[in-house]
Length: 293
Image 1 (tube, rainbow, N blue to C red):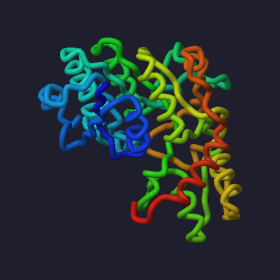
Image 2 (image 1 turned 180 degrees about the vertical axis):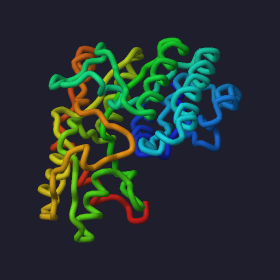
Image 3 (image 1 turned 90 degrees about the horizontal axis):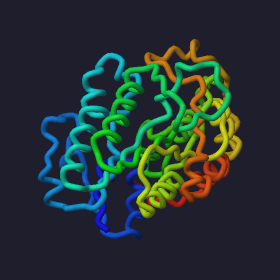
């Protein structure tokens, strides 16, 4: 099997590609090869040149708040670019795999039961709407496509530089001695890219198609996630829970976007470990990450 991965250098791509190597040859692609922000220029020639059996898209426009003021950019990459890629895969008889987000939910509140793949989505932001459109295009334009929704991704390869991921942001700000105010009314499931990658590889190996949720087990608010990060790291920063209204982000986030994974388990993939266990594995892995990488 030959597998092409767009966005191979990102957090998820960096964990996914080594695991995919067990299935066959992996072709690493970047924005220089395919720029989804220019859907009219998505080159079918790339598929013809690499001739993959499977094409996995890990690339996306992820600037959630900025998307509110530049919707064209979000939809170009997350919707129209995905459509062009899905159509190219269909024409070349290449299986298409695409990643989406828990943010496609949110409008149907109050809610306290994990959301299944059959639940009606309700995006509340431009970013979320663009990702939902991308899901629809992937499933409608590509034969036997696989779309994976996940949530709150963090991975060791996103731990470098300023920002990185939520875990690194919390650790960095705490290390600077600054107070932290974290929302406590948005419920989700933080998910470790290594675990999401393992489950995705199993679906790819099995030739599974359709829409699936892949997240670690359990649920918590972002404040609870932050508190657990500090507990496991042995830190006691000035941490205060706040509401989404107090945080006042430009883009609205779902109040409850915990994803159910019953369909994943029914497809023969074991449920992922609880998110606090996954966090512990991440913290251990980041200790062994080579310096400068």
